[in-house]
Length: 295
Ligand code: GUN
Image (cartoon, rainbow, N blue to C red; front, top):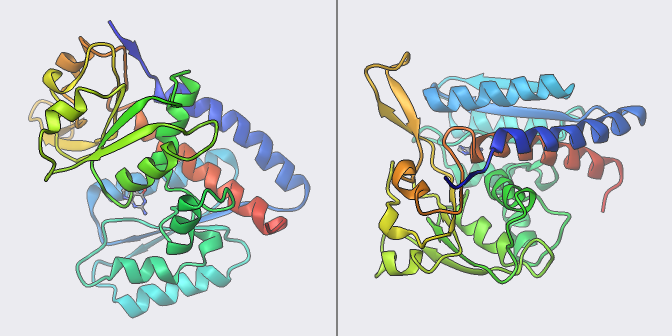
């Protein structure tokens, strides 16, 4: 059996560090605050927002959850973001994706104060990632993947990392993060996507294969080299009549067959998912700290 990379256990280590950081900020009179905006009633988004709010409360952070109707207009949403930009009790703002059709997501992201953009989606933060400026915010899932690799003592430097998927939320920022010239980077990164030729040949050459394409069980044993590390970012709901909710969660990796070849692998759930929330909390604490002493 391969090593199972336990995201829940690693997230707990992150929280232990964060609790110390939060106590220190509170001793200076600062309570970090996160606002999460949910527009509409996408069930998966609702579940994510609920767990983010719960985690804030567990850590003793100030948490604001704004649930807006699916009919909310761009102008209304911009006004809510603007209020939060000005609110001194809020250090991080996240607008949950996907948003309804009438919303121009890029416009909303640009309206965020980049110092409160704990999602790392604002162009100013994307630019900071490109130029290796550590004062910027990096998207939470890529940060979580990097932290999983570090905590699992998997060598990133010099490794060939193949990322399946080129999204703004995961694939692109993760590629930039792992190729950064620093001790937690220095990987040789290849990004493959739906239009890549010879996809299987490329994934087979990966030391570390990261699947983030949003297609259940896409990665099969034939995609993976013996002894590779496999990180599954996918969280897909598939129908399952015998489960309590009528669905179950599966990743982008066909776990059973791939785990026979991999040296280490993340499960779904319990792999990358818990780390994403942990990194959101970490970015919120970082935002509060930077508010106290701007860089
Ligand atoms: N939806 C799925 N993942 C994310 C994320 O990291 N941030 C936001 N805002 N929405 C998401």
